[in-house]
Length: 387
Image (cartoon, rainbow, N blue to C red; front, side):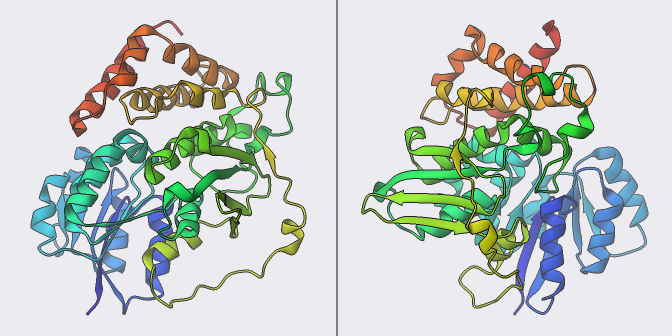
Protein backbone atom coordinates (compact mmCIF):
# COMPACT_ATOMS: atom_id res chain seq x y z
CA UNK A 1 0.00 0.00 0.00
CA UNK A 2 1.30 3.44 -0.92
CA UNK A 3 2.16 5.93 1.82
CA UNK A 4 -0.17 8.92 1.79
CA UNK A 5 1.37 12.40 1.72
CA UNK A 6 0.16 15.99 2.18
CA UNK A 7 2.25 19.01 1.17
CA UNK A 8 1.23 22.37 2.64
CA UNK A 9 2.91 24.97 0.46
CA UNK A 10 3.84 22.82 -2.53
CA UNK A 11 4.74 25.77 -4.79
CA UNK A 12 7.53 27.05 -2.54
CA UNK A 13 11.16 25.86 -2.59
CA UNK A 14 10.68 23.22 0.13
CA UNK A 15 7.53 21.85 -1.49
CA UNK A 16 9.13 21.71 -4.94
CA UNK A 17 12.20 19.93 -3.56
CA UNK A 18 10.01 17.35 -1.82
CA UNK A 19 8.08 16.74 -5.06
CA UNK A 20 11.36 16.12 -6.91
CA UNK A 21 12.23 13.47 -4.32
CA UNK A 22 8.80 11.83 -4.55
CA UNK A 23 8.94 11.92 -8.36
CA UNK A 24 11.72 9.32 -8.23
CA UNK A 25 9.65 7.02 -6.01
CA UNK A 26 6.02 7.31 -7.11
CA UNK A 27 5.47 3.60 -6.41
CA UNK A 28 5.91 4.33 -2.69
CA UNK A 29 3.90 7.53 -2.29
CA UNK A 30 0.43 8.85 -3.08
CA UNK A 31 -0.11 12.59 -2.65
CA UNK A 32 -3.54 13.32 -1.19
CA UNK A 33 -3.39 17.11 -1.00
CA UNK A 34 -1.37 20.06 -2.31
CA UNK A 35 -1.82 23.67 -1.19
CA UNK A 36 -0.81 27.11 -2.43
CA UNK A 37 -1.64 30.71 -1.67
CA UNK A 38 -1.72 32.44 -5.08
CA UNK A 39 0.22 30.30 -7.54
CA UNK A 40 -2.79 28.37 -8.81
CA UNK A 41 -1.28 27.58 -12.22
CA UNK A 42 1.74 25.80 -10.72
CA UNK A 43 -0.22 23.89 -8.07
CA UNK A 44 -2.67 22.65 -10.73
CA UNK A 45 0.26 21.60 -12.91
CA UNK A 46 1.72 19.71 -9.91
CA UNK A 47 -1.64 18.07 -9.21
CA UNK A 48 -1.96 16.82 -12.78
CA UNK A 49 1.60 15.50 -12.83
CA UNK A 50 1.22 13.55 -9.57
CA UNK A 51 -2.46 12.66 -10.04
CA UNK A 52 -3.53 14.63 -6.94
CA UNK A 53 -7.29 14.96 -6.54
CA UNK A 54 -7.39 17.73 -3.89
CA UNK A 55 -6.01 21.27 -3.85
CA UNK A 56 -6.41 24.11 -1.37
CA UNK A 57 -5.80 27.65 -2.68
CA UNK A 58 -5.96 30.18 0.12
CA UNK A 59 -6.25 33.40 -1.88
CA UNK A 60 -9.92 33.75 -2.86
CA UNK A 61 -9.42 35.42 -6.27
CA UNK A 62 -6.94 32.76 -7.35
CA UNK A 63 -9.17 30.04 -5.90
CA UNK A 64 -11.92 31.22 -8.27
CA UNK A 65 -9.50 31.21 -11.20
CA UNK A 66 -8.43 27.67 -10.32
CA UNK A 67 -12.04 26.51 -10.03
CA UNK A 68 -12.72 27.87 -13.49
CA UNK A 69 -9.57 26.25 -14.91
CA UNK A 70 -10.40 22.84 -13.40
CA UNK A 71 -14.12 22.76 -14.12
CA UNK A 72 -13.68 20.00 -16.71
CA UNK A 73 -11.40 17.68 -14.73
CA UNK A 74 -11.65 15.68 -11.50
CA UNK A 75 -9.47 17.90 -9.29
CA UNK A 76 -11.38 19.24 -6.28
CA UNK A 77 -10.48 22.83 -5.38
CA UNK A 78 -11.00 24.21 -1.85
CA UNK A 79 -10.48 27.68 -0.41
CA UNK A 80 -9.60 27.07 3.25
CA UNK A 81 -8.35 24.43 5.69
CA UNK A 82 -11.73 23.70 7.28
CA UNK A 83 -12.20 21.06 4.59
CA UNK A 84 -9.41 18.74 5.82
CA UNK A 85 -11.87 16.26 7.31
CA UNK A 86 -13.53 15.94 3.88
CA UNK A 87 -10.22 15.24 2.14
CA UNK A 88 -8.42 13.12 4.74
CA UNK A 89 -10.82 10.34 5.77
CA UNK A 90 -8.10 8.30 7.47
CA UNK A 91 -4.81 9.30 9.10
CA UNK A 92 -2.15 9.87 6.45
CA UNK A 93 1.52 8.89 6.76
CA UNK A 94 3.42 12.14 6.22
CA UNK A 95 2.76 15.89 6.05
CA UNK A 96 5.20 18.58 5.04
CA UNK A 97 4.26 21.99 6.46
CA UNK A 98 6.16 24.57 4.43
CA UNK A 99 3.78 27.52 4.10
CA UNK A 100 5.78 30.73 4.60
CA UNK A 101 4.98 33.18 7.41
CA UNK A 102 2.37 33.25 10.15
CA UNK A 103 -0.17 32.15 7.54
CA UNK A 104 1.29 28.67 8.04
CA UNK A 105 0.39 28.42 11.73
CA UNK A 106 -3.33 27.61 11.39
CA UNK A 107 -2.89 24.94 8.67
CA UNK A 108 -0.02 23.36 10.62
CA UNK A 109 -2.09 23.01 13.78
CA UNK A 110 -5.20 21.87 11.91
CA UNK A 111 -3.41 19.10 9.97
CA UNK A 112 -1.65 17.49 12.96
CA UNK A 113 -4.59 15.29 13.96
CA UNK A 114 -4.82 13.92 10.40
CA UNK A 115 -1.19 12.77 10.08
CA UNK A 116 1.10 10.17 11.66
CA UNK A 117 4.20 12.31 10.99
CA UNK A 118 4.62 16.03 10.43
CA UNK A 119 7.77 17.72 9.13
CA UNK A 120 7.63 21.46 9.84
CA UNK A 121 9.64 23.98 7.82
CA UNK A 122 7.58 26.99 8.92
CA UNK A 123 9.73 29.10 11.26
CA UNK A 124 6.97 31.46 12.35
CA UNK A 125 4.68 28.63 13.47
CA UNK A 126 7.38 27.13 15.71
CA UNK A 127 8.46 30.55 17.06
CA UNK A 128 5.02 31.96 17.84
CA UNK A 129 2.82 28.93 18.42
CA UNK A 130 5.05 26.12 19.61
CA UNK A 131 3.06 25.51 22.81
CA UNK A 132 -0.10 25.08 20.68
CA UNK A 133 1.66 22.83 18.17
CA UNK A 134 3.23 20.70 20.89
CA UNK A 135 -0.15 20.26 22.60
CA UNK A 136 -1.68 18.90 19.36
CA UNK A 137 1.34 16.67 18.64
CA UNK A 138 1.08 15.06 22.08
CA UNK A 139 -2.71 14.80 21.94
CA UNK A 140 -2.75 13.00 18.59
CA UNK A 141 0.53 11.07 19.09
CA UNK A 142 1.98 12.57 15.91
CA UNK A 143 5.70 12.25 15.21
CA UNK A 144 7.37 15.64 14.67
CA UNK A 145 10.59 16.23 12.70
CA UNK A 146 12.07 19.71 12.11
CA UNK A 147 13.12 20.45 8.53
CA UNK A 148 15.40 23.48 8.85
CA UNK A 149 18.97 22.24 8.38
CA UNK A 150 20.15 23.35 11.84
CA UNK A 151 17.22 21.88 13.76
CA UNK A 152 17.13 18.72 11.71
CA UNK A 153 20.84 18.30 12.49
CA UNK A 154 20.27 18.76 16.23
CA UNK A 155 17.36 16.30 16.11
CA UNK A 156 19.52 13.79 14.23
CA UNK A 157 22.43 14.15 16.69
CA UNK A 158 20.24 13.81 19.77
CA UNK A 159 18.52 10.63 18.55
CA UNK A 160 16.11 10.60 21.53
CA UNK A 161 18.79 11.43 24.11
CA UNK A 162 17.68 13.32 27.20
CA UNK A 163 18.14 17.09 27.07
CA UNK A 164 19.59 16.99 30.60
CA UNK A 165 22.77 15.53 29.07
CA UNK A 166 23.32 18.58 26.85
CA UNK A 167 25.91 21.10 27.94
CA UNK A 168 25.81 23.37 24.88
CA UNK A 169 24.22 23.52 21.43
CA UNK A 170 25.88 25.48 18.63
CA UNK A 171 24.04 26.37 15.45
CA UNK A 172 25.96 27.77 12.50
CA UNK A 173 25.51 30.86 10.33
CA UNK A 174 27.21 31.63 7.05
CA UNK A 175 27.38 35.32 7.90
CA UNK A 176 25.36 36.23 4.84
CA UNK A 177 26.46 38.58 2.04
CA UNK A 178 27.89 41.27 4.33
CA UNK A 179 30.11 39.22 6.62
CA UNK A 180 33.28 41.01 5.48
CA UNK A 181 31.69 44.42 4.99
CA UNK A 182 32.09 47.35 7.39
CA UNK A 183 29.22 49.44 8.79
CA UNK A 184 30.01 52.22 6.35
CA UNK A 185 30.01 49.80 3.41
CA UNK A 186 26.45 48.64 4.10
CA UNK A 187 24.97 52.08 4.81
CA UNK A 188 23.43 52.50 1.35
CA UNK A 189 23.42 48.88 0.27
CA UNK A 190 21.13 47.98 -2.64
CA UNK A 191 18.42 45.33 -2.47
CA UNK A 192 20.15 43.15 -5.08
CA UNK A 193 23.26 42.97 -2.87
CA UNK A 194 21.27 42.05 0.25
CA UNK A 195 19.57 39.24 -1.67
CA UNK A 196 22.85 37.73 -2.87
CA UNK A 197 23.43 34.96 -0.32
CA UNK A 198 26.86 33.32 -0.75
CA UNK A 199 25.75 29.69 -0.22
CA UNK A 200 21.98 29.17 -0.33
CA UNK A 201 19.31 29.89 -2.95
CA UNK A 202 16.41 31.33 -0.97
CA UNK A 203 13.38 33.61 -1.26
CA UNK A 204 13.64 37.37 -0.80
CA UNK A 205 12.38 37.53 2.78
CA UNK A 206 14.66 34.81 4.19
CA UNK A 207 17.62 36.23 2.23
CA UNK A 208 17.20 39.61 3.92
CA UNK A 209 16.82 37.87 7.30
CA UNK A 210 20.09 36.10 6.60
CA UNK A 211 21.80 39.39 5.78
CA UNK A 212 20.61 41.02 9.05
CA UNK A 213 21.17 37.71 10.92
CA UNK A 214 17.55 37.82 12.12
CA UNK A 215 17.15 34.31 10.73
CA UNK A 216 19.60 33.09 13.42
CA UNK A 217 17.68 34.92 16.14
CA UNK A 218 14.63 33.01 14.94
CA UNK A 219 16.55 29.73 14.79
CA UNK A 220 17.75 30.13 18.38
CA UNK A 221 14.12 30.63 19.46
CA UNK A 222 13.14 27.52 17.49
CA UNK A 223 15.96 25.53 19.10
CA UNK A 224 14.83 26.61 22.57
CA UNK A 225 11.24 25.65 21.82
CA UNK A 226 11.75 22.36 19.97
CA UNK A 227 14.39 20.91 22.29
CA UNK A 228 13.10 22.50 25.52
CA UNK A 229 16.48 24.01 26.38
CA UNK A 230 17.48 27.35 27.91
CA UNK A 231 18.75 30.21 25.75
CA UNK A 232 21.92 30.14 27.87
CA UNK A 233 22.81 26.74 26.38
CA UNK A 234 22.52 27.89 22.75
CA UNK A 235 25.21 29.76 20.82
CA UNK A 236 25.70 30.86 17.20
CA UNK A 237 28.89 30.16 15.30
CA UNK A 238 29.89 31.96 12.12
CA UNK A 239 30.78 29.33 9.56
CA UNK A 240 31.10 30.83 6.04
CA UNK A 241 31.19 27.48 4.24
CA UNK A 242 27.81 26.24 5.62
CA UNK A 243 29.09 22.67 5.80
CA UNK A 244 28.63 22.11 9.54
CA UNK A 245 25.03 22.69 10.64
CA UNK A 246 25.05 21.87 14.34
CA UNK A 247 27.45 20.97 17.13
CA UNK A 248 26.38 19.55 20.49
CA UNK A 249 28.64 19.24 23.51
CA UNK A 250 27.35 16.73 26.05
CA UNK A 251 28.04 16.68 29.78
CA UNK A 252 29.88 13.37 29.41
CA UNK A 253 32.60 15.16 27.41
CA UNK A 254 31.47 13.92 23.99
CA UNK A 255 31.11 16.45 21.17
CA UNK A 256 29.00 15.57 18.13
CA UNK A 257 29.14 17.49 14.86
CA UNK A 258 26.75 17.10 11.93
CA UNK A 259 27.76 18.11 8.41
CA UNK A 260 26.10 17.91 5.01
CA UNK A 261 26.20 19.71 1.67
CA UNK A 262 24.44 23.05 1.37
CA UNK A 263 21.28 21.49 -0.02
CA UNK A 264 17.86 21.32 1.65
CA UNK A 265 17.30 18.09 -0.27
CA UNK A 266 19.21 16.20 2.44
CA UNK A 267 17.11 17.13 5.51
CA UNK A 268 13.89 16.92 3.48
CA UNK A 269 14.82 13.46 2.17
CA UNK A 270 15.58 12.26 5.68
CA UNK A 271 12.30 13.51 7.14
CA UNK A 272 10.46 11.57 4.43
CA UNK A 273 12.49 8.35 4.66
CA UNK A 274 13.22 8.42 8.39
CA UNK A 275 13.64 4.90 9.86
CA UNK A 276 14.10 3.30 6.42
CA UNK A 277 17.12 2.04 4.50
CA UNK A 278 16.51 4.36 1.54
CA UNK A 279 19.68 6.05 0.28
CA UNK A 280 20.38 9.35 -1.42
CA UNK A 281 23.07 10.24 -3.93
CA UNK A 282 25.39 12.88 -2.46
CA UNK A 283 28.87 14.27 -2.92
CA UNK A 284 32.01 12.80 -1.38
CA UNK A 285 33.13 14.26 1.96
CA UNK A 286 34.72 17.63 1.35
CA UNK A 287 37.94 17.35 3.37
CA UNK A 288 39.08 20.76 2.17
CA UNK A 289 36.10 22.33 3.94
CA UNK A 290 36.57 20.16 7.03
CA UNK A 291 40.21 21.18 7.29
CA UNK A 292 39.33 24.87 7.17
CA UNK A 293 36.01 25.34 8.98
CA UNK A 294 36.67 28.95 10.10
CA UNK A 295 34.31 28.59 13.07
CA UNK A 296 34.02 31.56 15.43
CA UNK A 297 31.42 32.92 17.84
CA UNK A 298 29.15 35.51 16.31
CA UNK A 299 29.79 39.18 17.14
CA UNK A 300 26.80 41.22 18.33
CA UNK A 301 28.77 44.32 17.33
CA UNK A 302 28.89 43.09 13.74
CA UNK A 303 25.33 41.72 13.86
CA UNK A 304 23.36 43.76 16.46
CA UNK A 305 20.16 41.79 15.83
CA UNK A 306 21.67 39.05 18.05
CA UNK A 307 21.16 41.35 21.06
CA UNK A 308 17.42 40.81 20.70
CA UNK A 309 17.95 37.36 22.25
CA UNK A 310 18.75 39.09 25.55
CA UNK A 311 15.23 40.54 25.61
CA UNK A 312 13.36 37.28 25.09
CA UNK A 313 11.59 35.43 27.92
CA UNK A 314 12.36 31.74 28.49
CA UNK A 315 8.68 30.82 28.27
CA UNK A 316 6.82 30.91 24.95
CA UNK A 317 5.01 34.23 24.88
CA UNK A 318 3.20 36.64 22.57
CA UNK A 319 6.35 38.80 22.55
CA UNK A 320 7.77 36.50 19.85
CA UNK A 321 4.74 37.26 17.65
CA UNK A 322 5.55 40.96 17.96
CA UNK A 323 9.17 40.31 16.97
CA UNK A 324 8.21 38.20 13.94
CA UNK A 325 5.62 40.74 12.78
CA UNK A 326 7.86 43.79 13.19
CA UNK A 327 10.63 42.09 11.26
CA UNK A 328 8.24 40.97 8.53
CA UNK A 329 6.88 44.50 8.05
CA UNK A 330 10.25 46.25 8.15
CA UNK A 331 11.80 43.81 5.68
CA UNK A 332 8.86 44.56 3.37
CA UNK A 333 9.58 48.28 3.73
CA UNK A 334 13.20 47.72 2.77
CA UNK A 335 12.22 45.61 -0.25
CA UNK A 336 9.77 48.36 -1.24
CA UNK A 337 12.58 50.95 -0.92
CA UNK A 338 10.92 52.81 1.96
CA UNK A 339 13.78 52.33 4.45
CA UNK A 340 17.50 51.57 4.23
CA UNK A 341 18.95 48.14 4.97
CA UNK A 342 20.83 49.31 8.07
CA UNK A 343 17.60 50.75 9.52
CA UNK A 344 15.81 47.38 9.81
CA UNK A 345 17.43 46.09 13.02
CA UNK A 346 17.60 49.41 14.96
CA UNK A 347 13.92 50.07 14.30
CA UNK A 348 12.94 46.58 15.49
CA UNK A 349 15.02 46.92 18.66
CA UNK A 350 13.57 50.36 19.43
CA UNK A 351 9.99 49.19 19.01
CA UNK A 352 10.50 46.03 21.08
CA UNK A 353 11.54 48.17 24.06
CA UNK A 354 8.29 50.14 24.15
CA UNK A 355 6.06 49.56 27.19
CA UNK A 356 3.16 48.65 24.95
CA UNK A 357 5.01 45.66 23.54
CA UNK A 358 7.07 44.71 26.60
CA UNK A 359 3.96 43.65 28.54
CA UNK A 360 3.45 40.72 26.15
CA UNK A 361 6.55 38.97 27.52
CA UNK A 362 4.45 37.53 30.33
CA UNK A 363 1.42 36.58 28.21
CA UNK A 364 1.27 33.08 26.77
CA UNK A 365 -0.76 32.37 23.60
CA UNK A 366 -3.73 30.20 24.54
CA UNK A 367 -5.21 29.88 21.07
CA UNK A 368 -4.28 30.58 17.47
CA UNK A 369 -6.50 33.66 17.38
CA UNK A 370 -4.38 35.32 20.10
CA UNK A 371 -1.38 35.21 17.75
CA UNK A 372 -3.27 36.21 14.60
CA UNK A 373 -5.03 39.18 16.25
CA UNK A 374 -1.85 40.48 17.88
CA UNK A 375 0.03 40.25 14.59
CA UNK A 376 -2.71 42.28 12.87
CA UNK A 377 -2.61 44.84 15.68
CA UNK A 378 1.19 45.22 15.43
CA UNK A 379 0.97 45.79 11.66
CA UNK A 380 -1.72 48.46 12.12
CA UNK A 381 0.22 50.07 14.96
CA UNK A 382 3.38 50.21 12.87
CA UNK A 383 1.51 52.01 10.09
CA UNK A 384 0.51 54.78 12.51
CA UNK A 385 4.09 55.39 13.67
CA UNK A 386 6.40 57.78 11.88
CA UNK A 387 9.45 55.51 11.61
